[in-house]
Length: 374
Ligand SMILES: [Zn+2]
Image (cartoon, rainbow, N blue to C red):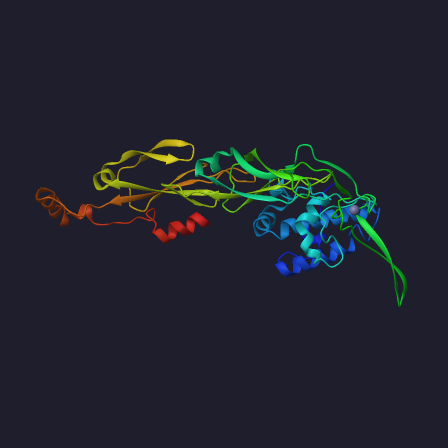
């Protein structure tokens, strides 16, 4: 089945503002909300579809990628939850619960009953920052990090809540001027989980949880960007009873490289050559993200020339090729000269051979920059 366009799903046209996107999603979410459409599979599918569209269009990074590449932008399916159709109800409620403004839906729950069953409480998400150097970003890396997360304390046991009989909800009949009204609200004895503690070990908190340190292995794909968030499902805090664990959100932090400057997927490197090297030509060893390479600098190179090493930049996060490494040639002019050197250059002053004679191939800096972005 062909995936529908995200804008179409939300009834928007391309170029919709962030406020319009949020408003459109809220409307769809309320229309197809499972509480309003019990046991309606089609409504549930539409609810999920709208959430997936919103997940992408509400995130500036993902939206930009979607606008450029369409659904293909997320086919790589990295851990960041690229909107690849893998959203479940728990994800939707935990990520976008606030869209409902607390006005009736969800409230304290992130779980979804799925047709009359009890709601499953979800543990809270944890967030960590992971520092990566440029080589790790370029090649992808697996990082092992220590995470302090709440787990169910060994020896804890839970039983069905006797107040709500495990439904997580209490219903009340109230007499109002409109007649008898039945209202349902979360059970405040079990917090909506439908379970209470049976046996609680001494070192556990009120929910039967304790903090434990765990080593979590995180696979980071090549091409991530500073500030990007990856999700490791189920590695956040555990929930009490039969609830489901929260997620571990990994925020990428990029370390500045000593020699290489990143600009999107391209890298820039400043190469300095001496005046005689520029005149005579030379070869130079330069750093790249995959090790050192030797490059040739032609005799008569002009300062400001850019040598492009194709594919030696950062691989695209979407898996489409890689950026380039742009080597900027800078000719180093000596600031002082001894007597003999001075006499040599003074002798060249009147020599026509040293007169600048730029050819069309010796483009100005501004023309080169223009070329790079065209
Ligand atoms: Zn209860």
